[in-house]
Image 1 (cartoon, rainbow, N blue to C red):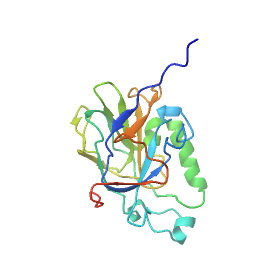
Image 2: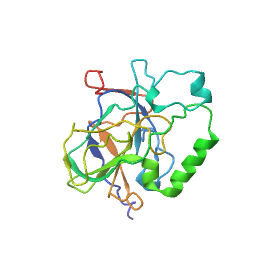
Image 3: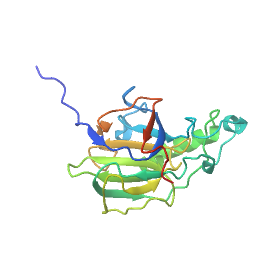
Length: 217
């Protein structure tokens, strides 16, 4: 009697940022982490940049009732760093950073989500980078700020290289970074690869602090 085939081996990454970041949608709490396995996202994880109070931006009446400009969030534009050594196989930097929606469900935003899903991976990821390792595993960093993507396809990157800035492009309700690993560069046919960060997988609600607490601009 044989068991189910083993899945891909987890890849260990460096945290792709400095400062304080709140963990959301962690596969340490459930798999699939985002409620779906489409586009190899079963082990994806989100990081939201926060301040000393643990919040991404102050909560006001506007937060509940109206969209907020991404520039209102202190983490918007915070530096994103390469989490591993590899070669850039995709670099997309054409999507706008749209308003944030942290309050009541918005019919207008729900419609944009449906449109992005219909348009496929790139519309959901927004501005993003795909970095391929020497073993073929590909790491995606998504929702980057428009105009911030620095490397081009074919460029080599090393851990800690500044590669982009935190944005609110694609399927994103507030500025944050979405990270996922997969077996190949095409998320339509790839399998999800589990991730670790410095040998661990942080749970939802944890604030990860990297460096000296002063986030890179």
